[in-house]
Length: 65
Image (tube, rainbow, N blue to C red; front, side, top):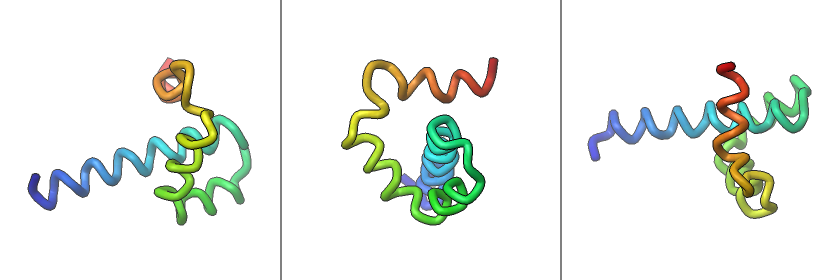
């Protein structure tokens, strides 16, 4: 994988974690904090189970309806 491919994936995962943050919190302050620490936040959401039961797909699709 080239550097550009990695940066595109990194950016998409960052936007994905911000969508998850807004879905659960609806707070601008928490959104900014999760934007700064989004890799840690995404791992945290995976470990506690907020993205289980098909929510990993349902949350992003809810923004594009």
